[in-house]
Length: 187
Image (cartoon, rainbow, N blue to C red; front, side, top):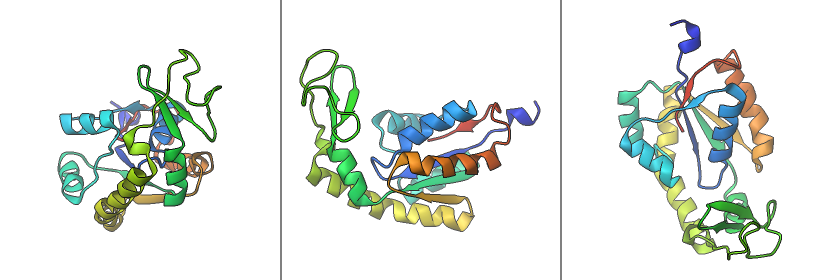
């Protein structure tokens, strides 16, 4: 096992709708990394898209099991996230996601492929979004401080994933020198 087998254990943090999923998939694509997660709690959080760790005890538990190399924090203004999330509509049967601002369906409220109605998840309604964002901020502030004290926190600020991504990419190139290096990213 040479250097190419080295693991990069990264945590991607950010409020709901900040672009964690998009950044994760780009990391996998551009660095040919394996999106690895371990443990039922972690897997469950990923499946539900709730993000992990969200609390200080979770961060400490994760640290006991894995040496976290870096924490990528996506810092997107709440107003931007609120607009982004409330514009999101889904086709429940397929999971297809539409965004009224940048990926709208051909006919408002109707899935492009099936012609079936789209729904807005309870989580994406404006009043719910505000509650979720406030809860996220309260819950994760101690987690971010914890990682900052450990010296592994890297914060990337912006309003669009496409504008934040080049900085995340450049940062990761310093951590994963060879683009084809096999490594592990824990979302």
